[in-house]
Amino acid sequence: MAYAIIKTGGKQYRVAAGDKIEVEKLDVAVGDTVTFDEVLASGNGDSINVGSPFIAGASVTAKVVDQVRAKKVVAFKFKRRKGFHKTKGHRRHLTRLEIVSI
Image (cartoon, rainbow, N blue to C red; front, side, top):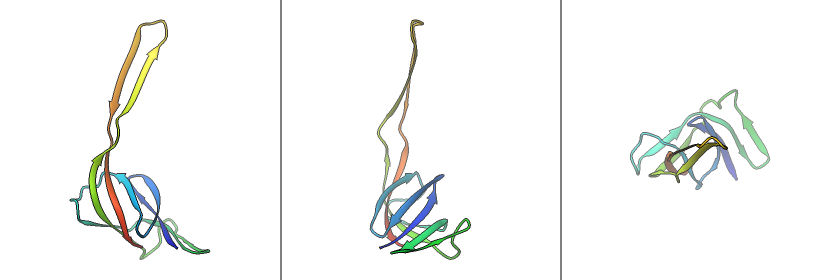
């Protein structure tokens, strides 16, 4: 099974053809294709090819499935016996991708 490790949005993802992943929001329309040129490593079976830092000429193509927002994350702060409490929350913007080819 061929796989690759790509970098996008400050994070690294291990992907294979047919995988569906959620990454930080990309400014592309639904249905478009995205090409990731920052491939850190790729492998096929027992062999692995590691870049320094990226593999020259390697790319991963993905199709944009949806633009979504993640579940709400609540940050609650309090100090005991002081009457202090603060609630803040946010929802991350995500892009759902389906990996087409490596």
